[in-house]
Amino acid sequence: MALTRLSRDEFLDGYWEYTPGEHVALAQPTGGGKSQWMYQLLAATLKQYAGYLSVRVGIPKRRDKTAAEWNAALGLREVPRWPPPASFKSRPAGWALWPRHLNASPDQDPDKILEADRAHIERQLKACAVDAYQSGRSVYVADDIYKQAVILNMNQFFSEILTDGRSMECGLWGCNTKASGTKEGSVTSFFWNQPTHLFFGHDGDKRNRDRFGEIGGVDPQYVSEVVQNLEVHRIGRNNISDQLYISKAGSDGSGGPAMCIIGP
Image 1 (cartoon, rainbow, N blue to C red):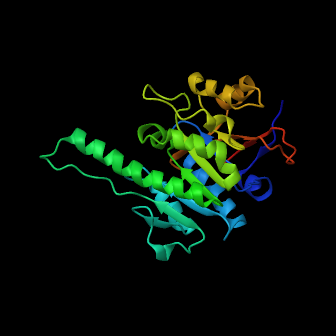
Image 2: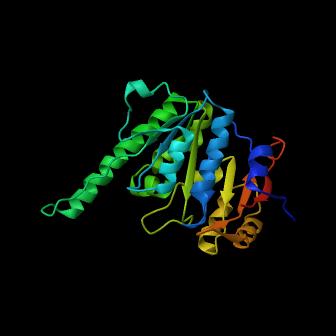
Image 3: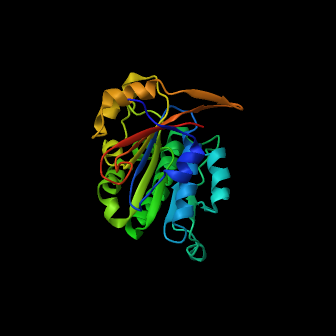
């Protein structure tokens, strides 16, 4: 089956249709440009729903150049803790929660500091995600969803958003670098079968592609073959993968899956 191929601009201008409360999943190995693409989708969504949807981006990393640049471009207010100061809550675009990490001094036990740091980051990000869910008309963005779900113990709550968030118009958007998970655990299976919109970049690891069997409504073998053969383009200093897009709402909202390839 030949899939329609679109440029990113063509897709965003003529095909991207998001309804508040829908979930979005992006998956591919590190370095393929998925975070950049996720922010481009978010920018188009905010343009459509300005003043209606509130965005909360949860950033668990110490440094993230892509997040910093896009937070500014989207007009998101960066805050180090949740809740933010009351004076910021009238900003319709939303917030980027970027908790400050704890640093160990030479006389401290590094393991205890790491444990305390994880607990601190988890507490802040979970408070933000819960607020998005309870407030509704929102998007919670988990850029590194594996770290938040598994390392920061947010998996159970993400399962709740993914199963119940639509009725609250709260959408969970997540980027996953290793679909198969690790020995420490994996992102909830609801991350694969609940999203309306799924984007996959090139992935040569069959273990990762095996997770596609949990999507539902598509032929996982076909999806696996397409993802394995997606082109990767050298653009500047970056390797940017084509994206396989799966819309479980269909191309006309009919409820049947629709697919296309999105180029750079």
